[in-house]
Each structure stands twice: as C-alpha cells, then as structure tokens.
Image (cartoon, rainbow, N blue to C red):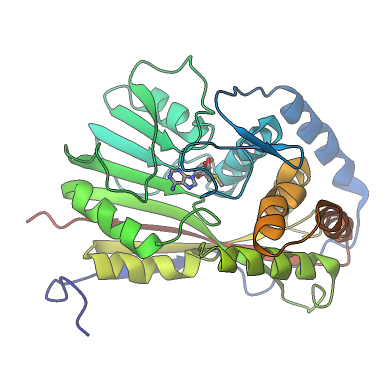
Length: 338
Ligand SMILES: C[S@@+](CC[C@H](N)C(=O)[O-])C[C@H]1O[C@@H](n2cnc3c(N)ncnc32)[C@H](O)[C@@H]1O
C-alpha cells in the first residue's frame, strides 16, 4: 500500500553514535564521585502536586485516569529531572538537534516536569512556548513566554489550530498507544517548513557480551513490558521513528542513534557518566515506579511480588559484571515548504 505523500521526495540521513563495542572499565576506583554528584542533585529538587490518585503508596494522574502507568509524585518528578540531565550530557548540553531558526510558536509534548520547556523558553525569549501533559506537575513560576496545559496529546489537538514552527517530544516511550498517529498529528500542526523532533528510547536493554542474559534485570524488563504490551502502550519507539516520519510526509529526516549504558561499567568517561545518571534515575523511582501499576493492573501481580522483582533488578543494576545498555534515538524532520 502506498504511503501518504509517497510522491514527495523524502530525504533521510543517519548518524550513528553507537560504538560497535563499549569497552568495560576494569578499575572501579574512580566511581565514588558519582555518588556525591547524584545525591547533591536529588536534594536540590522540588515538585508540586495538584491532582492525583493514590495506589500502592504512589500517586498517579487523575485526568484520563489510568491511561499513563507511571506515577506523578515527587519521586517521579525527581527522576524526570535527573533524566533531563542525562539527556543534556548525552547531547553535549544541547536541548535539540533540529536546525530551527527563530521559532515563534513551539510545543513540548508530554512535558513532564516542564524542565525542557523552561530551558527552551529561557533560551528563546522570542518564542511562545507551550508545555502539555496529563499531569499538572510543572512549577508555577516560569518564564513569561511559557505556559503549561493539561491535555491528552493522543486526542485531537485544540491548541494546534495555529500552526507550530517547532514541535518537540522527548521520552514518550511507555506513554503513547498510537505513536504513528501522533507523528501525523504533529505534521498536520506544523507550518510549512516547520520542524518536529522526537527523542526516544528503544526501551529494551541489551548487552553486547551476553552478560544481561538470564539476569533478574532482564526478567524485570520482560515482565514489565509484557504488561505494557497488554495495555497497548509503545515501549520501543526509537527505531521506528524514521519510518513514522516518512509515512507522515516529513522530509529532510535525520536520525541520530546513541548508546546509553546502565551503570558505571564502561571505560569511556562520557559513557560512564551517562551510565551513572541512568542508574541514578532508575533507583530514584524507576524500578518500582515503572512496574507497579503495569504489573498489578494488567498482570494481576501482588504489590509485594512487584517490590521483590524491582529490588532484584536494582541489585543486578548495581553489578559491574552486567554490561547492559539502551539505544536512544533523536529523529527530526521538516514539513515541506510547499
Ligand atoms: C517519561 S515522561 C517524559 C517527560 C518529558 N518529556 C521529559 O523528557 O522530561 C512521560 C510524560 O508523558 C506524560 N504523558 C503520558 N501520556 C500522555 C498523554 N496521552 N498526553 C499527555 N501527556 C502524556 C506523562 O504524564 C509524563 O509526564
């Protein structure tokens, strides 16, 4: 079947930042500095709470109740802000990679704590920026050119009547049911010549040397993502983004693929730092946070069973002989000028 807009010339380029093999650091002496850095960061964070549902000791969104399976409490907000730092390290302090120039109207989809949108609004005072999320967990004191909305980005957009110059969506894995449709909605909501950028995971970890195989860490992801599949939620959008952008009609598509290790096992200092942030965010909330609602609501697990699996996964995550990593993708494309 022909894809829509198949008559258009779709250009596509790929940059692969994922090294063929990630070298293991045999000396563990320099790892302690990461502990200090991470505890300072977590202590300095706060978040706000307005609307919620409490379950298994965690707080969840109320608007479109049940559609997103991760909590929206302070622990989760701390985790999201740590992930923001992880992404800044990954992209060498850049907030985005698309070649945008003086964008006037910008939206950050599923903005979370709004931390990306706040940084972007500060850097682009000329732009009117919207951050949209199911949960009202963003701060109230923000740059004057930024406003936050509570809405479901998988519903028809009311704020898309005036076209956007730039649409940003980061880490929508474990959130979205019909990601391809969302990409088409983005295309429709851009002005001709505008850009959309998606930064997202392949949510399944892997190891190049087989050290993840048969571990509790691997079982954790298999079980939890089995429940997400039951809920119909996309957990590995990263490698599919390029095709979704082509199908929607985007041109000048560019794909950048990265490695994000889990833990401080790599020798390379940049990969080691990424691995430290990745482990820190998972420990801040992620292991129970990702698993509780999914496994109890969709697989009928008992809370205690989830907590045991999460703690086994956490213990494996600390092991230096398990060399797990994730792939992360930044994919952007342009709506044609005419
Ligand atoms: C993993 S977080 C990522 C947050 C943010 N994009 C970032 O990179 O820091 C996913 C966010 O998507 C939001 N979300 C999930 N489904 C959504 C939907 N259908 N509409 C709007 N927001 C949604 C969640 O509330 C959560 O804040």
